Image (tube, rainbow, N blue to C red; front, side, top):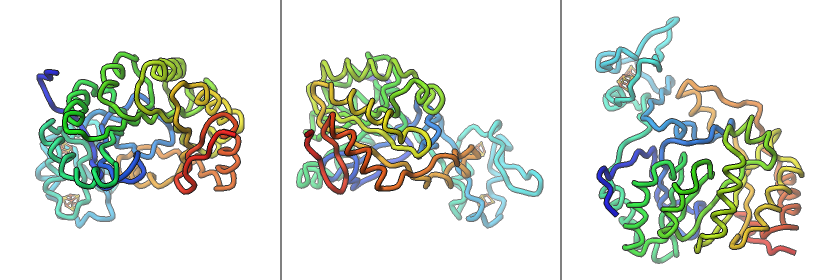
Length: 311
Ligand code: SF4
Ligand code: SF4
């Protein structure tokens, strides 16, 4: 495959990840997403452009960022140091000059060769633990040409590949990646149209249609995952609908509930974005009840208990 511009935009690379697929993994987080889940725990993933996070508690007031910003986006408003987001181009100069790490650039272009170099650095751990690399986000499929090149390179190197995706795109964008993928974790964030319309702001019909099409043609392993958000989708009806859908898929390996946590609040503040305070973490006993309900239809995976077999 020839990709003229072998570059993608990512916002993080986590090494030695153990929750993103089998074994020890490197997880690459792609920037840009086609969903707008109100509970998103990676708000820095949503925009496909670089962004600046500002943590005022770390600021020592040296003023360097005011001096270097070419857009005059570092300003004082009502006596407070803030960033004028309309002016900020995400160039990152302020973050590079900020010695106290009060400014952090989220999002950087990375070349395919550099990314492969990082991925292959931990190959010995993948080999020993049956691990590999996981592509997460954001929505990695939105950068499918770059991702296809990386996946193909991983295949050539014998590195196991996992994709985490939310399914809100044209199926063709995903289809071109399938020959190079070993496992897909597909998110269903709700069952009812209301959840997708009001809380995810994505095309439910497209997401469910893509999942069924994927299950028909994908040769690798498939899991369905649902972030379980108190006050949003933690009802019997939502989880039963999702589990039934997952249980009908040809090559499904398991279904997993991922309890919502509110730890991203600080990141929303650093980006000057609104945090959905009304979401809550379902108690462990409620998660257990919903897992038991789902297990009537599909094998359920729990990080502590492993995979339960369908009764
Ligand atoms: S460069 Fe960093 S420490 Fe200095 S004023 Fe700007 S944000 Fe604060
Ligand atoms: S990222 Fe660039 S434009 Fe934005 S505030 Fe920093 S220096 Fe200014």
